[in-house]
Image (cartoon, rainbow, N blue to C red; front, side, top):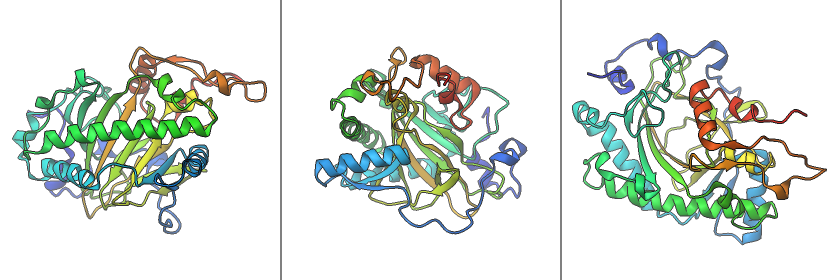
Length: 344
């Protein structure tokens, strides 16, 4: 029996009102923009340009947004199509009893498998979302037998996608390091070997999108997240107090800086606060690939970025302690990162 009703089941049952556990507090409900957002409003960076141009554009995007699109990124476009396709096939064609065979343990944070509840505590408002979380790196964590068997290419596609995302994450962190005048491997060396999870999220149509969120406001806890969307708008990033819609671009990958990168760069670069809204008309799918440090790694600001003119801004933190705080307190914007700020 399901411990938590899957959101997709609620939507398919044709409910007219969302259950109370999905209703966000008034101050966290989505706000309709006063006017439509212009397309491509987060920076769009072409990785086929000259290196100096890329570094300059990435540096500006990391300082001002913490989020940007990349194109000509080296990931085969067919692979982007395939992972969207296998993800949608699992959620829309796989029978519920088959899906439930892969259920994750909701009492543990970030457990692998099919789920609907991100946090282990019982008093949090639920997101209007189902998901499948895959543990993909290091290879010692990768066990494709934990992933769906159908469609037949599902496991192969996820494994290939994992490898391509790792390579792209390394490339982007290199540009970020160089844009700060650091050694090319500085940020990656501080993070260490990636612990990578791939989360395919499915956001069913919602009868009351004005009351809910597909994913509540937060910044990611790790180092860098690479995300692709389908053609349905839903991702929003916070910029200067306003929620900006991130327009879906079929061939682009969204880069979201995460909290450990903000710490390593001593606040020079900002992690992206973002959320996902719902809609009443059409299901939405996204694929987020998280690249995190190992739990035993201590993250601190790079000494090269600390000076009299730019004093130390953050306490160092062992990553497992940061993760524990994030899951215990809940995301709630960037409060977990702000808790590490040194007193001015």
